[in-house]
Amino acid sequence: MASNTVYIITGANRGIGLGLTASLLLRPNVTVIATVRSASTGTSDLKNLPLAEGSGLIIALLDVSTTSSEEITKSANTLYETLKDEHRIEHVDILIANAGVGFSFNDVMETSLDSILAHVHANTLGPIALYQALRPLLLSAVEKGRSAKFLLISSSLGAIGQMEGNAPSLAYGLSKAAANYLVRKVHFEEKGITTLAIHPGWVQTDNGQKFADSVGVAQPPMTTDDSVKGILAQIDLATKTTTSGTFVTWDGKPMAW
Image (tube, rainbow, N blue to C red):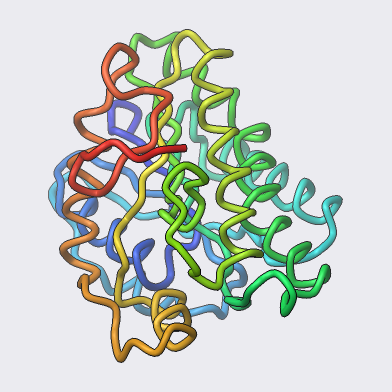
């Protein structure tokens, strides 16, 4: 396992996170660390995923859904300690910040400050705490001459320069825009870590359906499988000298910040 490519995927028990985990486990010599909020949160789907030769799955706990910054930090730090001490993880090649929330799709005057705060804690502070806690494992990959990457599953709703008209997305969009800043900032701070924010498309997930309901659309247009294929293609292609520090769509098109 020491020579395996090690991925961490947060929010891996459903939707895009589950799809990414399933696809990566079909690659040989891969270790996927799939995080879930609790041990009882849909882990059966993860445990039943088929594995390629030499590949393995580790299910770990990480909860960013709380509105306590202290609890988010504690959860991320506990994840780091668990990986180091219990699972003997010495490095992480690719860290994918996928976990988040999306439940308040409203205009400015209909959005409460509490709902904004909840989105910011999960979608902004969550990825920050995750990166801060697991940075040593990414740097360990760099020291070993491996390709370390930090990826954010973002959203076009967080693109300020490409704002989608009257889309009712203040809380969600604001939190994703702030997380995008993190991706750009880490790119400039870390010489050895490739970063990328990826818009996965309007996907048939729980959050995607909630937004569809808010704008009167029956169903999001993109399947999870198609989104996952595109996301993995962008992750595989990303290098420090090509797309690092940018915001792209699942099919590689540049997104405005």
